[in-house]
Length: 446
Ligand code: GFB
Image (cartoon, rainbow, N blue to C red):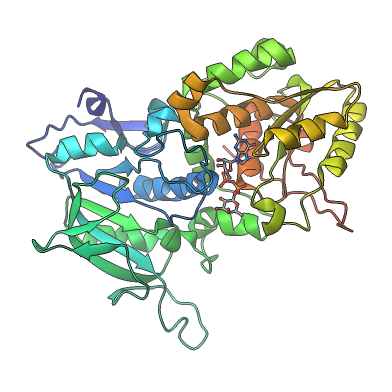
């Protein structure tokens, strides 16, 4: 609750309008005494960490738009059961957002709380309503896309069932006693703006959860307004269309500052092995609301960083993922071109592959971040991946992997830090590619 009291409601990113101090017994006050409402969401279980970050940005902006009219708080879905988090020895469910992100920074954009704090505020382990977002069974009418949203029978088997007491049970991030009072499938073919009016007009519950949040806000066919273009990012990235994101997109993105304990570990590694400090590299961080760098202001540490995605990419994108030998060849060329000796590798590859890669280099120094057991236990696979991203983001030159959202998030971090886009929007090519199209330059807008 102490933590909760510090939340500032903002109807615009930089404009603080009110502070609310709810307790577990009464609804909070906002302006003309409107009760605070809570938006929860979850994402298709198969999605990885960095795509989930993209969904967060879309939902966060929906909450921002809602706050123009009503006080809504976004409940952060605990992390867990991620397909890529392979370490069996770690307990990787119910992981709080504060393990990975700086909540104070998120709150400079919209009001957020952790799920556990939400349960405390509700005084009961309950979600009032769940809407399971789905497509329309019949698809488009007459082959035409139109805005619509209707409660319908569920198309797929849903992971929620009603128990004998009429409570809806299912996966609530690993919190076994949580239940929902109401559940419905909602067919949606809509952009986020209409989700707002649905939430304001069609429901009065104190808390509403959007399951499969990526569905509605994905905006797969809704390129007709500037807002939907903003919300459409993942799809645009996957199809490699060029474009520009709105200020709203970047505000949400900039507010996703990594937790200080993870940044500190990355910074120590940079100092110790890569001769890289913020002062020398011109990457000193300020509060995101104060930070506005020009392209080329950041110099970066004296190393090349590489995001070398392996595992499922070796078959999911086998045409575009290079062999280790061919990756080494490209890295050597970059070292020569940039007159550098050191390389930082961020990768989901195993130790054998890393040693094989190292074997292709005679003179260069090849580094990888290896966490201690204590750090693994504290910050999990997700924290280690963030440390890798942080170190990779600070290099003089970065090269990533084809359509990996892990690489995209590093590129955005570099945009925030003020790097020249030429040093950022690059990817490794495979030996079988005749034309190796480089990533679109998604430049920052303030
Ligand atoms: O983040 P992510 O959605 O990126 O999923 P993609 C990849 C996950 O693999 C990361 C681990 O979240 C990490 O857990 N991983 C990948 C890494 N690269 C590294 C690295 O350099 N260092 C460390 N420590 N960990 C998409 C998935 O992955 O790929 C989709 O989101 C699907 O679900 C698709 O599997 C094929 O965009 O690369």
